[in-house]
Amino acid sequence: MAFEFIIYIIVAILILSVVIRQINQYERGVMLFMGRYTKTKEPGWRLVIPIFQRLIKVDMRVNVIDVPDQDAITKDNISTNVNAVVYYKVRDARAAVIEIQDYQFAISQLAQTTMRDTVGEMELDELLANRDQVSQKIKGIVDKASDPWGIEIVAVELKHIELPEGLKRTIGKQAEAERERRAVIIKAEGEVGAAENMAKAAGILARHGGALHLRTLQSLNDLSSDQSNTVVFAVPLEILRAYDAQTKK
Image (cartoon, rainbow, N blue to C red; front, side, top):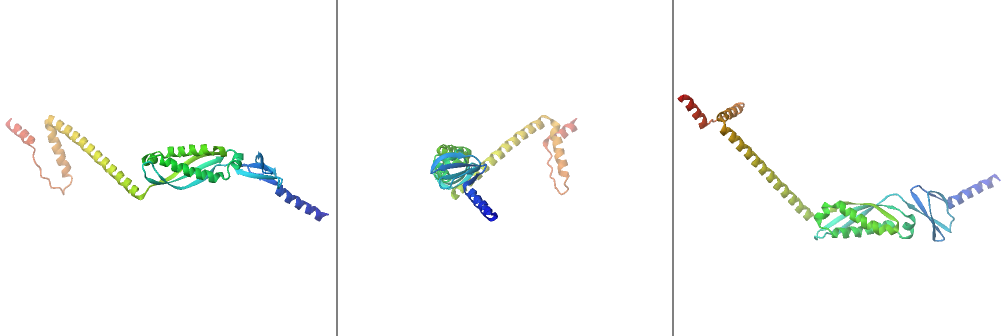
């Protein structure tokens, strides 16, 4: 009797393992009875009658699809290679199972074609400067197209925009030329400012008779701090005139 009881327990465990399915908290179970949809099951243990019923579990978490590199031509006929990632989640488990065969593959294909079309509508400068707007545009199109499948597109992010090597060199030269142009402008502005300050200083020295002498003595004092310097001193006419005026008195 004990042996038969053990056999019964083992058989019961095997039957329960076949007819009981566990749905995790992040999943929903789409129940089909003889091939027809009946109900979407919530998380927990669910009884499934073999042959007659089938339970399809759907992951409701946010998932990521890495969209493969796509060769696209911009509006100004420049070839680019664009890569992106799509973040999505299943909003309606029933629609994700019944309305589309493989929603992950469908989202990937839809994102690829949408990305190529969107890049083709923009010029290269606009594409590089407005990556966020491009991502939002792709997201809106894919989200609207996948709505009947019960899919919600959370975000679309452009990973990189690859340019031809020749164009990279051209852009690099253009950026270098722009930096040189700015450096020349800044240097010229500095020279203008220095000239204005020198003109102001010359005006002050001209208005005050002793100011030029003090400035000359200060320069001599600065030069004398280094004994290795050889100074050839030219006496300004103003000093001679001042000396001449003193001797005549």
